[in-house]
Length: 210
Image (cartoon, rainbow, N blue to C red; front, top):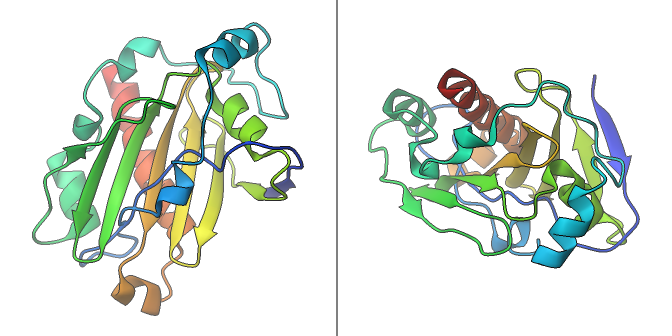
């Protein structure tokens, strides 16, 4: 069931930036920096928040995955077959673009579109930090329902860009970001649906790893 949540405090937008491009429907492309760069938080904030999770209206993760599933390279979070499905011919090579404020991240850019996958491990607050960061901005988070049994949120930054976050434990989450290529935007592709499809692939792979 889809629920839209308007949050009223201060912080950053959903920590996810990616985009889609290529020939298949819902292909992502790197989302604008506003989707991920706005999320800032200190280690002190993380340690304080981790003692009382979830908070700020975030849902509890009742079936957490072990943190060890996020120990690898985010550029390996999607299989070659999945990348080919996303981008079609000419799948690009992923490039590490870690964010100090959030954690490991990988970007795939191609033909005006791309995808970003991030492991949100630095804050130790999972989706709670995403909710807290939205407070005060007058922005909205959409709660589209579980992804592989885990709570998710999306945030559309522009008409062609959307970020999605999935909490795989109360303390950590994964993020995906989509910024559609021009042809996908013209075709009416929903960037948030595309971001959720990529998130579903990533979470499925992490569950297999667990």
